[in-house]
Length: 211
Image (tube, rainbow, N blue to C red; front, side):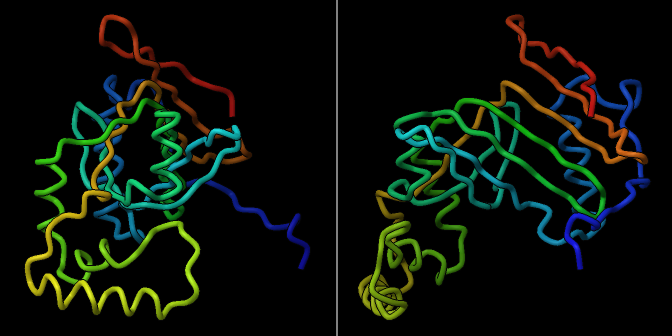
């Protein structure tokens, strides 16, 4: 098999200015709902890209946990690599890739922590194992083996029983979009790309980009 010969023809849908929403949040909501209803694998999975103090980018996949006019929300360990990079450079890029629908959404903007109340509410809605796991895992740190995680989980499970509090190092981030891009695969690699850029008056400039 020659990997350079792997190709796919994109022919499922189109994305036109007349059929898209002038508000990118509404367009995103429509596409996300369609991804969920289409039962694509993990439609809520998104790639988060950050940049460290060494100016090198890094990416990882997380799950979106909410969105509204304030921005896109996810939760993680603040002491993780992404948390440390966001502390030094509070800008990030997100990407959703719904392969089965031949769609990509890219979002760029500034990131801030959500309120303690929001983080508490979500944390206490999680399954017990996940809440214990937030204590057990020193995310992004080098550990000697999986035994470290299992031992930590047992220790914190015995300590907190059914009511683990939210760890001080764990909580939510919200990305406030400044730029959106919606990509719809099309035949002959003539894909549809619509970019929305935030304007000073609170509106959005919608432009078509060449694929």
